Length: 342
Ligand SMILES: C[S@@+](CC[C@H](N)C(=O)[O-])C[C@H]1O[C@@H](n2cnc3c(N)ncnc32)[C@H](O)[C@@H]1O
Image (tube, rainbow, N blue to C red; front, side):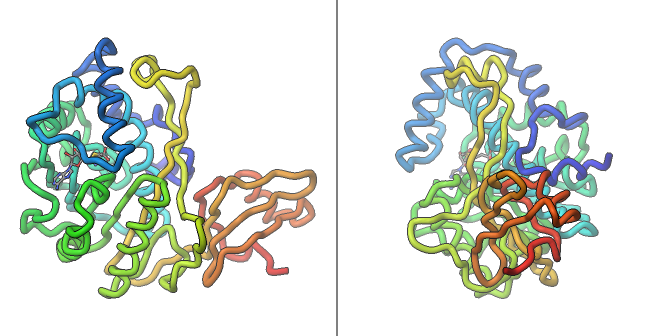
């Protein structure tokens, strides 16, 4: 199986990462300690929930960083793998050599990118918190990818990244930590730094989506084409209180459960994203926008199919389409010709 083959499943499993096993690196470097982390996790999640940012070094303790590694990073890793998998699926021949990971935290997106794009040769991480950089450097030593092991870490602001330009630029769960007044300038700089794809990921909330819709409009205005998730560069058809978002399934380790509480062996991390390209348009025919509804004899889908969102039904009698529909997930692209118009 190619390193990309499993990336096309939106409910990505976080336990099948093989040689680039970030969870194993965390377990090895930071052990399975959970005492004291539950409170640190609570402080972090209260901050995130109220729209706050990751604390700066004056307030960011080692426990906060460990709590992030134990309870947040598995989810952001699953999201990054899913998103970059969707980009790779749209651009199968694309082989980025350079990555700029903005607001890198402990380097989550870099690990996912090295897994999805084995062509990566050089990585630059930009991060404001020294404690996150320390953790990221420590973890990177255990990565099979030379690009991750050799990553350059810049301590500074994503609002003013280093001059470096990169084939792939990723800003994962950091846009919402910037003041609203700084967003447009930051996105312009990120786009200037982008040679190929700029991937911006946010929480799958109405506020996260609203920010991304603004980013999408701005980048299309600057000449970008949207590689994923959108099936066109036309105006987004989402309306009213609705918001475009997806979910990545995350296996929860014992430490994860101890830190976050709860009994379930998995959780679904909701996210929204946009990947904007300088390349030729490479849109999917359509994309599944909600969990498919399996009924007797047919499966119902809500899809985005330019220029609209619409409902679609695939009947068992439509054999080829039904074969696809039975395995389709929320977030999957829809192959051309599968959805018949009524
Ligand atoms: C929620 S974490 C996401 C980390 C990582 N990208 C991931 O997906 O797991 C946000 C990170 O962005 C960093 N950050 C926030 N604002 C920043 C800024 N203006 N410049 C650089 N880093 C920033 C925080 O310190 C934190 O490590």
